[in-house]
Image (cartoon, rainbow, N blue to C red; front, side, top):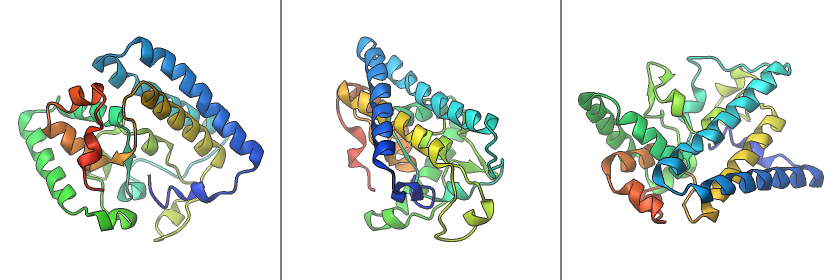
Length: 230
């Protein structure tokens, strides 16, 4: 997820913190590879990404139970107006869920995605300021399958979210824990020769919905989303 919720990346970590982050990510990688390598089929490798999402959710719950208070509430969607990137298996997970909708509703969604994507150019990537196409009635319409990057986004001061260009105060420990989980999982997919990189959410989901061969080409090792504009 891009600025302002990506501002933690500029935090200066101590050498010890950097080592802890890399070690945690590698532990996740090892565990994920053991499962993915033993169950390399389309159904499993797409379902497996839910472990990443549940892991990030659990970290957020643990932070709250530990006394952390977040300012984020349902209907507060400032972070739904910055660039969001999802991994390939997350994109396919979302597309599968959307395909369960009634045909007319799915058709309207695809039209909305086409309109959204038409406004994205290579030059606009660094200044992304567009409402997420999955935001409906001020709420996330794909909440149950939203990407991990959305799950880890949080603010300790919603007033800062309303200020353009503001650095959003976050729980750095939580962010780094989530990053280790995300990095380790993505690296595991790469290790078994499956693409798992960040792609702009709206563009990638539109491609997955529009191309029935996308899943099979991805499981065969093709980087199917590299053709998108970004």
